[in-house]
Image (cartoon, rainbow, N blue to C red):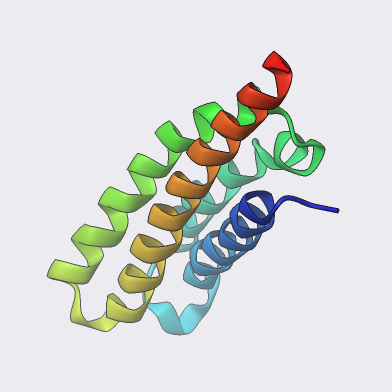
Length: 112
């Protein structure tokens, strides 16, 4: 059975990937370049997230800081992308917290 923090991390990763991929739609008003630039790096930690590797859950928090900053800036500055900014901010924050605590949980399991 999967740990709830791992499930939350995977769901938030999927939501964040969906928000970044939504920039590829022509209606978003953003060039394909920015959509790809933001979506492709999210594929890097996917094997570690699916495999439950502690190291991946530790460093993905640093990666989420970039998406958090992008979400906050779009939320504050771009009225057309407010939903995108809010979704990106919330999903990156929850992913950050869930991955850090899941890495901590895995560390405690290794000590036993």
